Image (cartoon, rainbow, N blue to C red; front, side, top):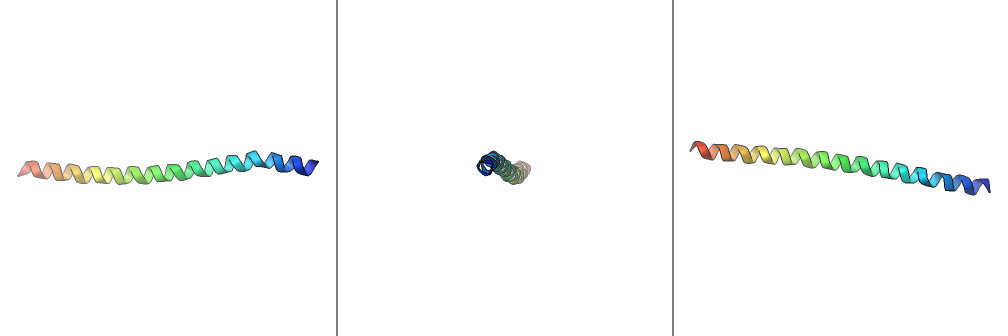
Amino acid sequence: MSVATGVVALFPLIVFIGFGGLGIACMILFIRFAVRAIKALDIYLAEKSRNKLY
């Protein structure tokens, strides 16, 4: 009976660790996307300002 209780008690811990890992993975992907978007915006703004000079 105590073995089954221990297994049942570990299940929420495993789920919690899984959600934590998923959250960290999502944060890393969002940061990578934000950096790429900022680079694209910089390129776009540089191109638009270069066209205004000519």
